[in-house]
Amino acid sequence: MPIFEPVFSALNEAGVRYVVVGGLAVVLHGHLRVTSDVDIVLDLEPVSAKKAMEALKKLGLKARAPVDPVAFADPAQRESWIADKGMTVFSLYSTVNPLLILDLFVRAPIPFEELWSRSKTIDLGGVKTRVASIDDLIAMKRAVARPQDLTDIEALEALKKRAAMRDSGA
Image (cartoon, rainbow, N blue to C red; front, side, top):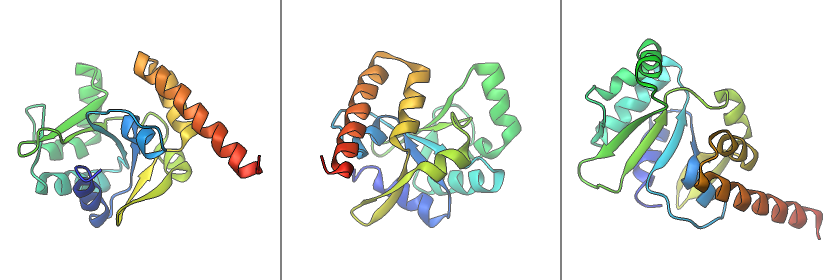
């Protein structure tokens, strides 16, 4: 995960609450698979969202859309993107490392406070990051139901079952 650690460090240092979801979250829970980006749900409260975007801009990340990334912090702007463009994620990329792609949800797929409260903290070699719970990942992937999501659901359910067996001493 070294490619994403600077992102998590920058968000942590800015005091931003976020939760990793999507394929990387599946990997962080223990199922090895390839993923090409990191999906993040940010606390979309305007001050927090602005801090997040400023921290990500300092890393040199740029928006795929022809806008200043700080526009993401404006709730009215995000709602406009949703209504006018059908946007679900706001993508950022690195001009230095083409493998570094972030997709930020423009609207939390699960109310943020619920997602945050059920998330778990994972230490990635000294960089702590919040990762969505297995149950929340399954719910999010069921809602989208692309072929990869269905495969991920099977893997997540198997991880959940193994954890339950381990916790019960079976």
